[in-house]
Image (cartoon, rainbow, N blue to C red):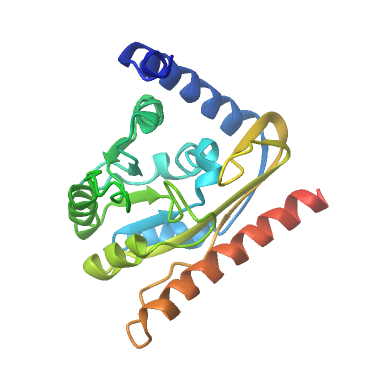
Length: 234
């Protein structure tokens, strides 16, 4: 059964269904958007942009593309998303391709199995795109957590390329949560939602690695707290 669910045919079908659901939510949820002006200014600059959103919001991450980014001037590389090279990531990769986005595939090696998951190649490809001034969306706590904890990969890519990090927060109510490591969010169409784009962050090289990670995480948490407050108030 597991092999069947991960077959190319099933992955393609799931990709289509995920794409359709992403579009439905993006178009029918009543969105409150904040921070889009600063994001547009950052887009117009020469730096690459790392748009960072938590893994639990994967189904909502393309909202920024649908509502804002697709209307902005084209970059050297199309806007892309960093997605796990696992079979589970295949359906998501196919879904975003239907949206006109590109998938950069790869994830960190498994600590126990020590298997190459394409992490080095993904970092190299992402860095190439960022150096050109292009835009990459990623989940800094994915693909296996801990949930809502920024992993070093985001910081490494920003340092290598002088890319700006955009804290990207999404929330909506009501919502279903799955019993997974990140309490994966299943949004509902025709509900209320908030999209918050935090102020662009540049890597602060005057402090240590742990402090830099903490600063990114605090900015992301602040954006998510703002999104949660908006949907609660509405």
